[in-house]
Length: 395
Image (cartoon, rainbow, N blue to C red; front, side):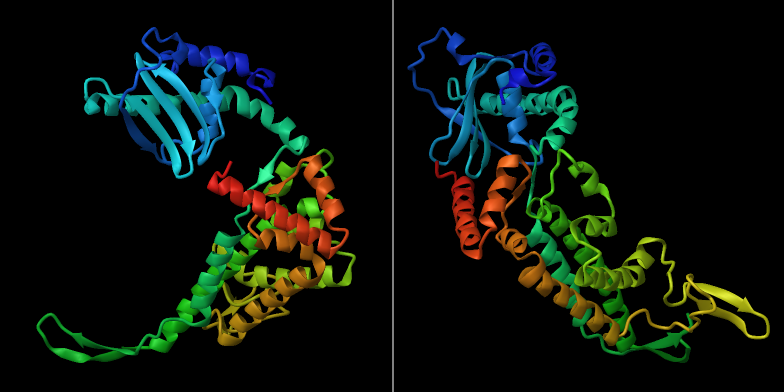
């Protein structure tokens, strides 16, 4: 889609020409000899400075500059004049680069100019976002013109990190603490249990691992949508991404099916006990002892919130080895079910690290590819090949 077709593009172009990009000109207007050779200063532009290179490219195109590409190891580049100097912005294999002409061997001047250009390009992104991107977002979502970045690997590693710590906490030895007065008189000693500290550390990492796993599951459910026949023109992708994990599960899975419902119930049990408790101020629902009831003649007794008559019990350690094993055995069983039976095609795609599109063409391709394991394997291999070409900029 060209810039002229986007609502707000003309207003954005006028804003940019009058503000941040008013000193940027087409290099073809340079009256000097176009064939002259000159040294160039190169400046790397970090993602902290410009996170979305496509936006600055688009901003430069809006004011009439031409972008070129791709070529070997370069996705695109834009040539322009700034304060009379020949400049180039290029997205290369190893990042965004700014090139500025060096005049009279004055590299310091070129450095200053490059820094000014980066600041002005950063400013131009705000105009594009406010006047062009934001107004068009809702329609793009409805038309399925969206790609969800596959973050499976990073989310999985986070889960595995906390799981490993919960299952195998660092060994802590008992510590003997001598109690001594300021005058040096020894009053006695106390022992801090290393085993007790290890159990407490395991509990904390268990809570973190459950949070990480549910986050991973939510991400999987979003990536799975095109494989499950999701149509963004009928159902809101934006709203789906924002709902809670249980609502996502109910839309992706069929709770009238035995296994879909059985795993849902088991996951809810784990989430209610270990995740929700500690994401809502430490107040439990049906487990443990976050509230104490004052029984006359007995004293203050801990009780779960869901039913005082159904479950009453003292509470000393939030998690024991049996609890930890139960949680991770469920997660492993659920993962195996997804990969082997329920969502095998989707999980193959996700494990490959490929992003997921929501446009009609991609969804139609998936329907055809999933007709057999062999066809899907070929389709997956082809897309992995294309992704590698794109990453390596082998154009």
